[in-house]
Every structure is written in C-alpha cells, then in structure tokens.
Image (cartoon, rainbow, N blue to C red; front, side):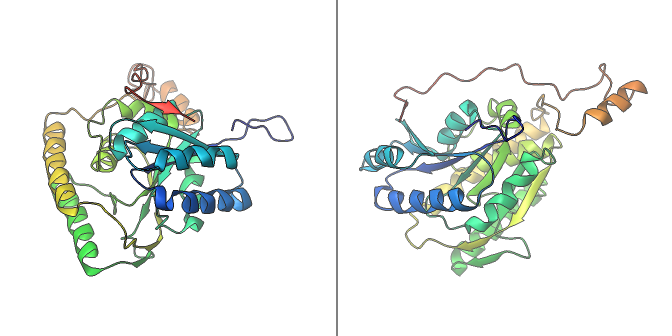
Length: 296
C-alpha cells in the first residue's frame, strides 16, 4: 500500500474499513463492487479491510475468500461486537495516511469517496464526513428514518453545540495520526463512536470537511433503532459531563501546511511558540489487541 511514484516520492494512501456483523449474504457482492470501483477510478494506493466483529454466520469465511481473490482486500476478525471497536482496532494500526469507513450495504454513492478523502490527503482538513442532511445531498429513505436522523442531529446541536450536520452517516474518514491522538479519549465502542469522535474533533478545533452524499436507504438494515437511540442519549449525557468538566482537550499533531504559521507565531511569541503550543503528538501508544483478534 505504501507505493512510490515515478519520481520516487511515496504516495499518500487510504485504508477503507468495512465493519460487518453477520453479513455473509451481501459481503461478496459489496466488496467486489467497491474493489472494482476503486481499482478503476481511485488515483491513490488503497486497502479495503473487512472488519468482522463477532459474526456467527459465514461472514469470516466469505471475508477470507475475498482476500484470496482480490489483491487489495484484507480481513480481520474480532470476538466482540461493536462498530466502534472494529474501527478503533483497524484504524489505530493502519499504515495508511488516511483511514475511512463505509457501511457494507454501500448505501452511499461511491462517487463521493474521492471528494471525502481528498482534503485529508492534501493535509487541508483533519476529518471528513458524508452528510445526508446537507442541502445538496440526494437521499432516498422513509419518513421514519428521516425524522429520527434529523431529530438526533438537532439534539446534538442543542445539547452539545455540535456544528456538523450528520453524525451517523456511515461514510467517514480521518487522518490516521489525528485518529491515533483521539482514540484513547473515545470511550464508546458501538454506534455512539461516530458522534464522540466528531464532538472531540470540534472541541479541539479540528477541521471537519462535509460532503453532500447520494444515499439510498437499505431496506434490509437490521439496526435496532430504539436501542441505538437510548445508547446515543446516554452517550450525549456522558459527553455533556466531559465538556462541563473540561475533559475534552487532546494533544494533537500539527496539520500539514501549518508549519509556516507556527514558525511565524513562534517568532513573535504568539500562540504557535514553543511555550504555548499544545498540538503535539500524543505520547499514548497503541492499545493491546482484543482477545481473539486475527487477520487474513
């Protein structure tokens, strides 16, 4: 995945994680489509990682078969469930410059992927999210899910002063070094993981790039809406307490392209001077692998 161009310069790369739980029936088709699309049109080195979290069907077998058949596909298996847990595990260990994820149903149009990751590869932004609530998004889904999505994001604005428009769209990316700094501060391992990541990013003044997406809702989605909503409300309460007690600050690596700003500020004793800069790399190491984790 770490390739060089004709001039010998290492190309920036992306790892796309597809978290799955009991998705054997759709995995082959979805990963095949994604792999073919990226091979044909994505101009950067990439890896697709299927993150199987505690599936009890033939998902792991299907994933390992894909790794043997498709050159850019990798797979990991975790014994415990949780989308956030799977993303933490793979993203924290990635060798790519940018890590991303998308839902296995590929509800989001793949033409939005390059616009999602391009500002991160250039170093301009730190995170990127697909938004179904952006004015220019094209979304096909039922009124119930539309109401729940808009209500949840409104609660985030009212309760956590969130400025991003869509916390739960399964189409996100982040600079790998930024995620490593944030990872130890993200407590949730399930559906609230996305929201917690975004709130921490905003509280630390990171740049979040939003892409209007083309989205067609998956009628086979098995997300437990009620249970997820309850967990999200609990997560919001926990984040409110962290904000009130000042426990959201994180030491972060500098954004590419800001070195000249930091140097100029240092020369005048400003915010970027050695005495006051706080965007330094996190000293925290990687978490130990979960019990039972294995790769293919």
